[in-house]
Amino acid sequence: MHGIGEKCAVIGVKSHKDVFEYLYYGLYTLQHRGQESAGIAIQTDQIRVHKDMGLVSDVFKNVYLSGNIGIGHVRYSTTGSSVIENAQPLVINYSKGSFAIAHNGNIVNQAELRKGLEDRGNIFITTSDTEIIAVLIAHEHIRTDDFVEAIKAVMKQLVGSYSLTILYDKKVIAVRDPWALRPLCLGHSEGTYVVASESCALDVLGIKFVRDLKPSEILVLGDTAESYSGPKEKVCHCMFEYVYFARPDSIVDGRCVYEVRKDLGKILAKEANVKADLVIAVPDSGISHAIGYAEGAKLRYGEGLIKNRYIGRTFILPDQNQRDVSVKVKLNPLSFKIKGKELVLVDDSLVRGTTLKRIVGILKEAGARKVHVRICCPPIRHPCLYGIDMQTSKEFIASEKTVAEIGKVIGADSLAYISFEGLVKAIGLPREDLCMACLTGEYPLKERQTKLV
Image 1 (cartoon, one colour):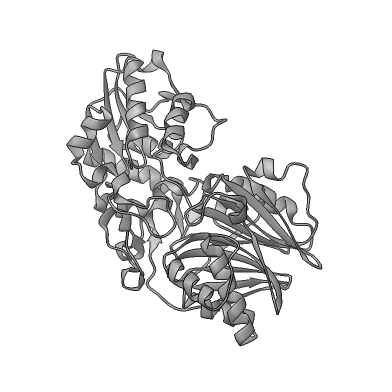
Image 2 (tube, helix red, strand yellow):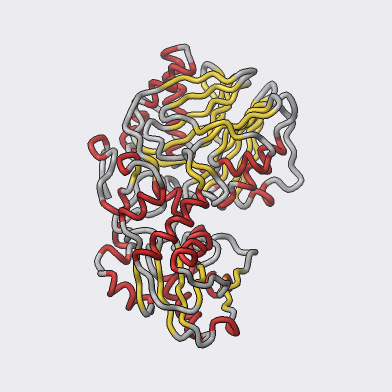
């Protein structure tokens, strides 16, 4: 609900039976990670692709592709505009054959890599960094005559976040970046292998979760699963996967997202308790956090806002005017429940503040006596360069304002954020294994980045 965009989601399936339904329902489950475009590539004697702008249910209406191996993608544009040319999977044809590729993440040195390839005579069809990765793989494959070695060579050139699924030679190849910034997991049941951005897709498909891919792992899925290792780097998981992006029913790098979010709320309740009648959430993003806050504060939790579930997540709308309008039709207060009450309103994070300002206004117009806002993520002050649509410091309300000033802007009677220590404790991973660049400005890949925004 805070006006920021996720990256994308990828899935790959290798089975002894048709995989289209696995891919379709897997992408449907991962739709929260991107609503601009969707696509599926399936390989039989050749690679066939169907992709278009829109939601999975619309893109694949009356469409079926036969084959027992394929990959899929849903997209939210971070690098490259929201046009059909940038929809994925992309198919690359070159002297050694062809392959399809889908990408979740963002390559921060993409401008430098693109220029180098253009200087060598390459012409690009898209404006996405995914095509850059694909062209580099093709070049290295021609040079090395080994597809896995080609991927390893390309990984040494890429700076940024990437989880890839590649369809090549009737195999699915999954690749996770050396820093493990973006999630990617493996499942297997009765001869069917599935790799996906989140484990919730495996649950829906009835596939047993096996493990998360390791940092810098190249996993080749054919009749068996073969694992290779690319270059080693310092592990740096994105903390925002736990705070907001991943579905609460997913397991990300060994941590249950729902439990992390409940713990965030519990810890925040201890750090910033307040007298109130009712704890409510900004649906759906703040529900798990609010339940935890209510437990930690020993206050009653209840619904105060009813969500129109026929609208996508607000952040997906790229235009601020569209986001403002969508808030008005997306949330309606339960006036009889909140009138005259002192409320604690809990959300996962606060970026621009425009949406939360409108929500606080809605609650007060409905008769809430006071609205205390509690945010389960420390203030966001710096751009993300690794695939989240937070690209300039100017869009962050916390970049130039104090907590008290922000509270005044959004109309809250009080405002509090969770501490850095509380965030790390709730996630349950070592601080040194987390990327918190959007909070601290300390970029884990800084020495290798070509530019900072």
